[in-house]
Image (cartoon, rainbow, N blue to C red; front, side, top):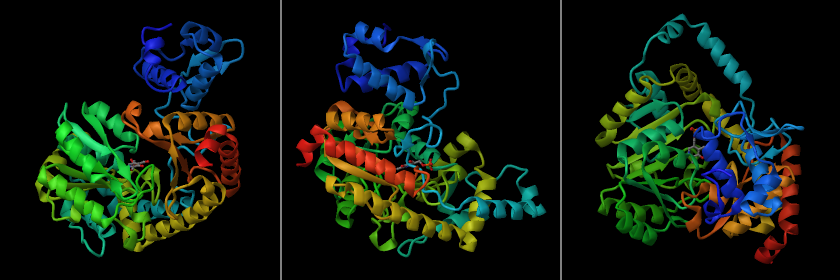
Length: 462
Ligand SMILES: Cc1ncc(COP(=O)(O)O)c(C=O)c1O
């Protein structure tokens, strides 16, 4: 049918997902321009010698990724208003327990109040007219350093750079440590944004296996030997998607290997504030190891839309990071940093955190009620939970079955840099995107019915 889609292209992985992936790549690269009509389910099934159900599943997946739409009598087309992301919850009749958004808490009144206070302050308004120092003003960095400090580790404002979200922070930290063509080691299942970052930076991602304490040191040793990486990227607090919190002993062991080989260690700390202090994994930046960088943001504990993120680094890396922030954005999101600084200083940020924790623990209780018997891994303050112990095939099929019931999850392969080499998979359920508890209950019930009913899962969970 297309040069980029034939039987051979479908050999690795699961056919319906491969089709969706190949279409997505063709659409995003412009090979299939917006508005192009694509074959009917039947035409494509015939051309690829596939069951029509497989093609229908692929088209459903593409629809939910926001890539195509169908019109009566006109057929199926590449969407003309192609967004960068699939539609989030609320935009369709599918309940989105796939996107990892924060729980809805009363954000608007506090935000409006702060904006009104800023608008009434002429000095602040004038200051926002001009460029700011790279990485934020001294006042904003001081406020951020207070927010980021922990009892065991006081953050120096000079070690903070304020950027527009953890995604920017990750791109900056990875580009500073991994030149094009080099390798970054990541957890075998990781936040999918890393794949996008690796693509634009032309670096390789190599997975290292995980257990319930974090990345496995022996497999890290193997991966270091095999791939000669430049850096290691970890999410030690509420790993996404598995919810793991790294143990102290594990961090120590991993950091020993990292030190032996002179690698950079990057900690993704976006979920860190949600975890009570006593349960947090030791901070990599606090390990007396000078080749450590921490990235984080307010996305998971205040609001994603604020786009306030942080890079914390030791003196050894400050210059390279600052040069990259300068090249990327010059001064950061000054208005949003102003709002965030006020919230750090007057305790509103801590109030948001408390509201998130309350709301998340109520939602997690519900998820446990519906899914605990399936081995659900959760944490009272995590916005995602994980149904483990599925094969790649099972998780993909269950994901598709649950989608036909109107609930979108994410299957394990979406978190893998190399699904063909995955040893185990699962399903990630996020709790934040459901509009309210009633919607969440309905969705969790649907997930439970599919998992309980499905003969594949019966075999697994029996
Ligand atoms: C582990 C992890 N890191 C980074 C991000 C991106 O955060 P931000 O919205 O601040 O760019 C996410 C978002 O889901 C995430 O799960």
